[in-house]
Length: 289
Image (tube, rainbow, N blue to C red; front, side, top):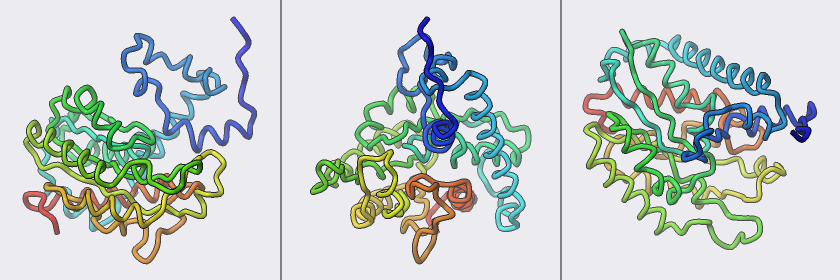
């Protein structure tokens, strides 16, 4: 067997922050029999199996600590009994990087619900795939969402429809009309199969200056484009989380809610999303308000 190139310390730090949380081979190679074998995944990243396992374990622990921190918030703890869950539900999140993130909002929400709901026996399905557009998510909605017969579905998409590739900056990757059609189809597919209201999580602003400085990305995202996508998402029936995209900062997105790329969310940013979800879940009928 050929020698496996090992990541140096600088590469490991980049991997741990920008790649390991957002990349799971099992999500991208669903038909491969060995998709759940973590050792080749570790080797692909230049890591030992033990290193990758430890990184992911630490991320899971970070998500749990974030959940415990949220539960200390009186505004949250006082409404937990109003959440219409009995602990037996299947809960699926369809999304992009913000959702796939190993220590992201869905992982934090999972811990909040498992801790706070008596005799919790939930089934959580993270159907987030990093950098997915609405078209890519729609293509896999049957095998990644519908097949699980979910009781609740959270949809968090749209950010990567709005990217402008550095090589072709004159247009967004997806026309707004196509984003609208994809979101509309996702809604019709899921509403026909899910009894409870759909939860739509709007894309948050991006700190463009930080994104532009990161050599890992070959695109930019402008707020004028994201705002239009956000308006499309906010117009869907069901429960809409943060229709104006203010949860990362009402006047402007705050850097502490993001990783240094200005795109993906930090633990504190993900916590803001979870708080908004819990507050919406606790509303009678999950109506907007």
